[in-house]
Image 1 (cartoon, helix red, strand yellow):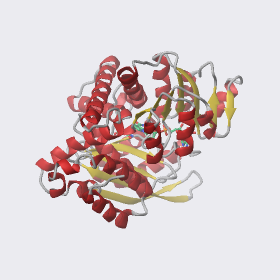
Image 2 (tube, helix red, strand yellow):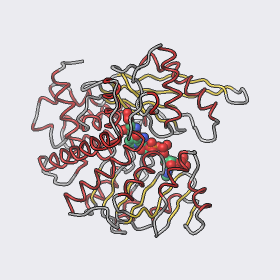
Image 3 (cartoon, rainbow, N blue to C red):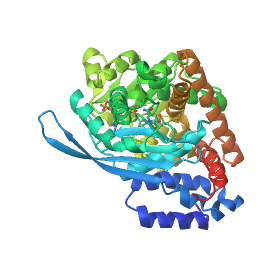
Length: 447
Ligand code: NDP
Ligand code: 2IT
C-alpha cells in the first residue's frame, strides 16, 4: 500500500490504461509501496514526472512469428520485446518462450529487470522479450525454425549498443545458438549481441551457472550478516529444476547444504538423505524431467503433484520456477514449517501479500531483483569480454560474480537501514535500484 497522493494518482492512471495487466500491476504495486517512503522527501521526483515515466516502457515491439512444424503445418505465435528503460545502458534482458507469455508478463519482467540491472552496478538498461510459444515436445528442427522466424523480425531492433537479449524460462543454450546464428546471418556481422552464448562463439564461462550460483552467494551473505548462519547441514528446497534451479542446487550442496526436494512440471522428488544434484543437471541438459530421476532412483519419494513440495519442511527455500508460485497458502506453510529463509531465484515467485506475510513472521526474505541478479551481472561480464575480445577464466568470472552479489547484498541491506526498514530487502532493492536509474534520468532531461 502507498499513501502519497502523487503515487495514488499515477497508479490510478495506470489502472485505467493497464487494468488488464495483472502481473505488471503487481510488480508496479510492490515498487510504489517502496517509493512511498521516498517521494515526500524529494519533490523533484514528482516535478520531473519520474514515476509516470517509469511505469511506461520506452518502447514495445509486438510481432507475428509464423513457423512450419515437421509435418509442414503452419503455426503463428506472438512475439514481444519490451525495451523498458535505457537510462543507464543499452536494453538488456532475457527472452522467454512459454505458453503463458503475454504483454502483462513481458512488461512486469522488463520493469523489474530495469532495477535489477541497476543493482548489478554494470551499465545495462532493462528489457525483456519472448513469445507465447511452447517449446515442450518440439523437435530441434521446429525449435530452430521458430527461433529463426522470431529473429527475422527482432534482429532490426537489436545491437550490441542497443539491445542485448539472453535466455530466460524456456530459452537456453540451444535457442540462443539458433537466434544468434540467424542474427549474424541477417546483419552480416559478428558481435556480442546475445549473452549466454556457447563458449566456442563468444560465451562466458560461468554464465550457465551464474543465476543459480549467484542466488546462493546472495543467500549466504544474508544468512551470515543477519543470523550468523551458513548453509552447513541446512535442508534445502528448490522449486523449478531448470537453468536457475539446477545450478542453485549444485552450489547449495557445495556450500554444505542438503537439497532434499525439487520439482518441475512432471512432479516433485523428495529424498531426506539429499538428492543427486549432478544428475538433475545432467537430465535437464537432455531436456528430461524429474520423473526420469525418480525412475533411476526408486528410493526417492515422487509425486505427480508438483505442489506437494510446499508440505515438506526445509530451512532454506529457493523458488526458482516462475511467477506467483508462493501465495498465502504456501507462505503460511513456510511459516508453520519454521523456514529460516526464502530466496527468490525466479522473477516475482511470491505474491505481494505472501511477501508481506513472510516478512511479518520473521522469515528472511531475499527478493528476486536482488538475489537473482547474478545471471544478468555475468551477462554484463560476457559483454565486457566480447568488447575486449578476450576471455577470463572460470575462477576469475566466479570471483567477480561473488563480489557483485556481495555488493548487491550490502547496498540493498544498507538502503533498508536508511529507509528505516532494517532487513526489509524488498524496500532496499526497490529504492537502491531506483536511485541509480533516477539519477541518470534526471541528468538526461525529458526523453
Ligand atoms: P528454465 O526453462 O531453464 O527452467 C524452468 C523450470 O521450471 C523447469 O524445470 C520447468 O519444468 C519448471 N517449471 C515450470 N513451471 C513450473 C511450476 N509451476 N512449478 C514448478 N516448476 C515449474 O528457466 P530458468 O531456470 O531460466 O528460469 C526460471 C525462473 O528464473 C524464471 O522466473 C526466470 O525469469 C528466472 N530467471 C532466470 C534467469 C536466467 O539467467 N535464466 C536469470 C534470473 C531469473 P520442466 O523442466 O518440466 O519444463
Ligand atoms: O531475468 C533475468 O535476469 C534473466 N533472464 C537474465 C537476463 C540476461 O540478460 O542475462
